[in-house]
Length: 172
Image (cartoon, rainbow, N blue to C red; front, side, top):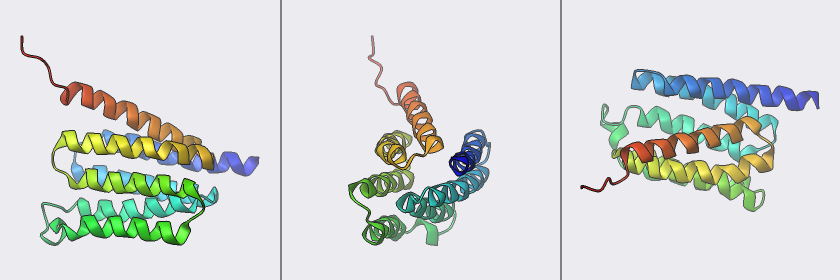
């Protein structure tokens, strides 16, 4: 039981960095803090023997590195990256298959990758909402309390953003 709480504490450290990233002023700092978050979540999932979750954190770490340069570097703006990261996630699914539960993080990352490739904020929020919701059964199954808290907070935050920015207000 002692190891369980150490593993949960590592996930909690990851949460600190995701919360910090949401408050960063510059795009590069957001990606940097999220990268630290992903390293801690990778360790957290590995210690939980949640290998699909750990692999998806690595995919997102690589994806964020490339996508952080999208629009600034020609090489990072090529559409092949979108399909490459989706193919990488599917490849991990084939290698790490551990039953139907393995589908959840992979599908979540596919939706998240598509979301982050988009430029329209409403589309990003919509597909990130699907991504967060799809992760919830997986984090419950593998026993990741910080992962569950992360997805719940993300879902609430996305819904708030959708309410504030994406709803159609009738003209009176």
